[in-house]
Length: 116
Picture 1 (cartoon, rainbow, N blue to C red):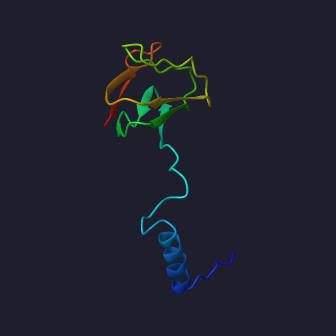
Picture 2: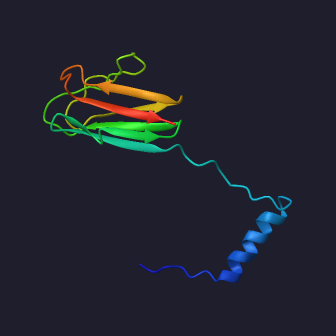
Picture 3: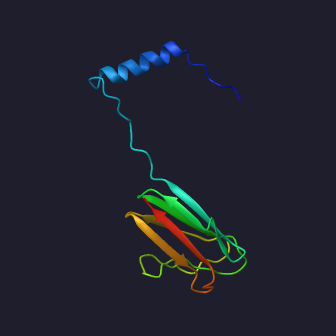
């Protein structure tokens, strides 16, 4: 695989054109895509067990276990369907707070998402 070589002077010229067209303000061409964080369901546990994310982050749970599981918040703010092996479910956390969750099929399985 060949890598393209771009001279630093060319990059500086491109940057100055971008800045000049916006009165010296740096702007992004497009908004950053929302973040996604993965949690694995395996061996009757959620891994990682506790995560801290920014508001707007989407958390994706994937069942890698040999038995069905689900993801349920005790306050009913979110609840997945039953996930068979290989299935995934995602939820976007729009507000800040601490969100505990568990598997209603196996209540000993618990986890936590902290949204800042």
